[in-house]
Image (tube, rainbow, N blue to C red):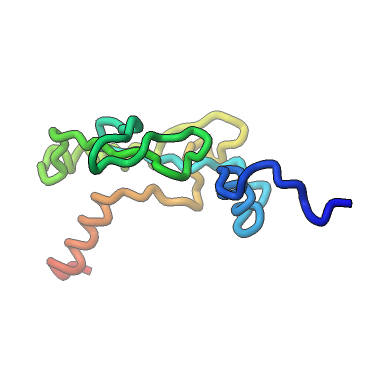
Length: 137
């Protein structure tokens, strides 16, 4: 008879590293499994998954996605220090708070759950500046 569970994948396979790790430690309740976190990212041109070459990560392997994800190629034209960029970023964050959703799963007619907050780094920086630099409470 078997002495333990059958090992279908090597210990380094994504099934064992990701799925089984989550199942054994921080698996979410049923109601939260239908919630998908979304990230809106600015300033990235692409993700280089070709790898190889001197000083570069190895090529991305779809069977082991947790390893060698790729290297981020940043957009040289993105300048978050520019006032126009900051205003655009803040407006986008504000709009994300109000995105409408008519699907049955959406609560309150919005895509964002009412108990969640849109995290916006520029908003956080403005709040930090106002409190800790200017002293406005």
